[in-house]
Length: 218
Image (tube, rainbow, N blue to C red; front, side, top):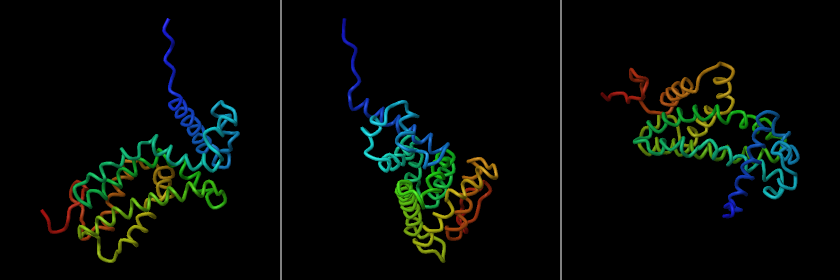
């Protein structure tokens, strides 16, 4: 009788690591970051604390790894790929608004939980700093493209526009619209695209469909 094929050790390790991170995410979303101790994660995942330490040297490593785990599970690269493929800067900016609005409901609970305790929890602070770094770099790349294509609205520099864009897509804004006001992701995306276009694009006006149209063009 043939022996059953064993799963490669590295594959088992990846599955175990993913299960631990999924457990950590559940705890953070429901009970907050402070509740995500190594013992709590072990209990939620149904393993021993020693098993958690085999994958993460400390709670800091675990919380830091959660950032990449969430982005991988939610396929951030795939979701935002159309932005890089956009034919021009204005289209890229609008596509960013819509994609961001679709993405935020999926990660808002963990993002807000991390943000709330970042001032007092060093592990959460490292996670939050990483998240903000990538948000800012994405924003700056969008604004730089507007500037390079000559369509950044007067009065803005790349730095000031990137800062303002970071504020406009903050977790608090998303929470207000999606949770407190009950907007759908589609509504948020379309109105945010309109807002970003009117704010950052030189001479931009809205066409009948709400899509961007440069003033003076047919």
